[in-house]
Amino acid sequence: MVSAVNETQYTLPLEETRSDDVARVGGKSANLGELARLDVPVLPGFTTTATAYEHYVTEAELDEAIADLLSGLDPDDVTELHERGRRLRERFRSAEMSADLERAIVGGYRRLAAETDESDPAVAVRSSATAEDLPTASFAGQQESFLDVSGERAVIEAVRDCYASLFTDRAITYRLDRGFDHSAVQLACVVQLMGRADRGSSGIAFTLDPDTGFRNAIVIEASYGLGELVVQGQVTPDRYVVFKPTNGIVEREVGTKQRRMVLGEDGTDVEAVPARERDAFALSDDRVRALATYAKRIEDHFGRPMDIEWLLDGERDDLFVVQARPETVHGGDRDRTVRTYHRTEDGRVLLEGTAVGTAIATGSVQILSHISEMDRFEADDVLVTQTTDPDWEPVMRKAAAVVTERGGKTSHAAIVSRELGIPAIVGASDATKALRDGESVTVDCTEPTGRVYEGTLPFEVREERLDEVPDTDTDVMLILGDPSRAFSLAHLPVDGVGLAREEFIVASSIGDHPLYAIERGESEAFVEELRTGIARIAAAFHPRDVVVRLSDFKTDEYRNLRGGGRYEREEANRLC
Image 1 (spheres, helix red, strand yellow):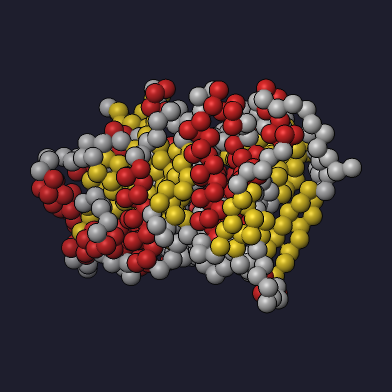
Image 2: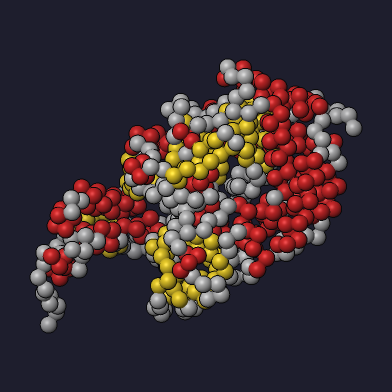
């Protein structure tokens, strides 16, 4: 066939794209072009267009293969899904690319080379689907990205591989679940200068709290090296919470960051992080505040909460935003129904980790070490694995709950579990050893520390409509001593916090007797934790009043803290 389309319509410089160009260049490319005009740093590059993809499909007569192989597919039949997807991807990879499309891609790459004054600059080639980064469906991680691609032929092959990845198992399932026509979704490819996060750091920023939907916070996670390990949940990153109205850092939590992904001679390598670097924060406070400023600017421009990927280029010593998409779990209309889960019986705790969501679920444990084992996973089982990536989504959509050994609150497992509305526990070390295949368990995420209990424990679900809460002439204020609950309670129709007891903050967030902390040389950490607890409550209810009462611990309450027995005598201290 001979194309009737001029090849200049196959590529477009990123700076020429707009947020309303999703149908033309896909969500990722459209948003990146918009960011460049917001005074947000973006790495230079270009994008192929949806027209280029359509040209590739038409020239290679792939539209018939798409219809034939995906017609009548049952997404719950994971074996058939895998086989049909594999055959379709092979057809895409073996198809010949027309000369005019190759010339357009090479032309864009050469212009980027001239701009950077490099003969064969290393680039990242990333998929950008026309049904991607929508307010109601993120399509996050559904298609492939290729890093450290260098040379004209390598860029062309990476574009071809991106086209094929439109038909990964996870992408096929995602479209079927959400009613998207496979043939109606096209793919563009972002070709950007490679950011050297392997010599710096990278991570994710949400312009709300991803767990509770609290909108006055920016939550940033950071780790050393390329960002794939953070997204895939392979590392536990540092975590920062920034209060939007003041750009002040409310909370810092250092992650383990035991590994980092770096560029090697033949692709990427994963290496151990030296202990000294693990214990240090991956970002300075100034960098955190700069990222928060960019995140707020992006949210203000798009008019909705955003999910942002960023990197700190260690060679250029500069921050760059590499992706911005709508947050799809809490970013839409707010649900005015409060659902409260409560276990009615206690049980033996088998495992603990970081809770995602606030729900409880029960089911039979299925431990999967590799995605190839997914055919033995049944609906409403509890998925237990080391970590997940987008290939696991056909399994996750069938799960009652998810438990992973690695990852933080913005890992793939956490993000997808929130979108699916199922409870998850991440960072639960040794989960695949502590639990047994087939045993019945209860997964409880009603507290910040998620717990897996032995057996099927009964629980209640209570629903209350906030719209039905009556107005009162008297101010209604909360009594709150656990800072971890502040963001989740902030949306309640109350007039503030009438009593935040300092001793309750110490007990729930710190746990150490003050003199014990001093004895161990941790007085500064004690003060920082106390500051963080108070700040979190104040931030949650801003600009409503928060009354903090200074400590009036009794001797027996002090004694119950860690190390308290060293300083406090036994005292009955009970009502007669």
